[in-house]
Figure 1 (cartoon, protein in one colour):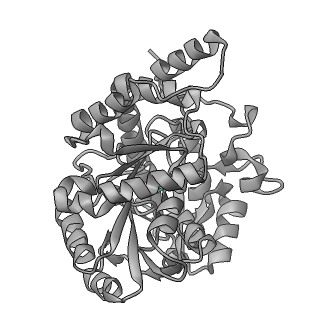
Figure 2 (figure 1 turned 30 degrees about the vertical axis):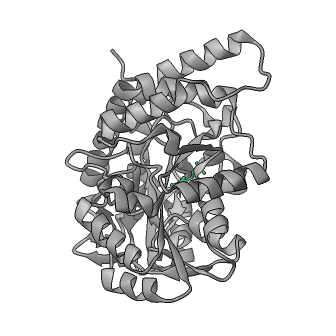
Length: 391
Ligand SMILES: Cc1ncc(COP(=O)(O)O)c(C=O)c1O
């Protein structure tokens, strides 16, 4: 039986961002498009069947949230991650970035400091800038090829009077760390001591690799849950980002009311019919598909590891989660722009520039490996050829 993840699809048949000129620029059509963080795989058959059935109903008037939606989500979180969440603590949102922006604007004031731990997902910076919040960077540490958190730095920043919030990325895009219970506890204790609210972006929760398991920050205990806003979404796990569907878990009742009030004030429409059926199907029956996708991604990690091992000018940071690989090209000695140009022009790669994640990302690039293996293998050949005269 052919492996469905081996099938190549033409993303250009729809205006996919990954292959769009907005991302690839002019003359980028032939590049290996491995930037934008979605998968080149079709969504699970159960999800597509549910959407097809909804389409056939043919009426797309206003809808409420299906009664099956919150039980599907809480059931998933309990069965998959051992996290018991009360349905009443969950609010629906169009997407995770919307939750982050709302959290910043509802729970902090313009000019307040929000901690981020670079290199980190670039949209965190845009949200903070656009909301006139101060970016307070606490760079991750990098020792022997493994990233960690700088807890002393965190304590100092958290203690500053105007620091009010921390954006946590758990698991961490782009470095692929799946934070441990001990790390999250230490972070949570520091934040609690200084009254810093933890906004935990857990969109990559389901994408963990063998040997690593995701700990929801809010599952550390009631006190941690009380000081957390958790962002969840099936977008990455089931490749349905364009369906715009996310959730926030807010256990603190007063904060939940404040969040609801802002939702109402902005009249955010949260019940997209296709998103609803996609989410219910994914959370109720998408587990086996996700397991197969994760096994395939593990195979792709192994392929990249083997291909890069003989090369001296690039190192793969071992991923624990996400389908994004963080590649260290610092040994090439190129400027950030020089590296982007080298990868594009010599290797034919359109990956995400490391510097987009903060200055700590200079000399690195983020490679998305959620693609058919043959395509990845071909891209590794062009990279190897480009690097071989140098390595
Ligand atoms: C850490 C992280 N948060 C949020 C997003 C975007 O989420 P959404 O599309 O739900 O706004 C991404 C997408 O790459 C991401 O990696």
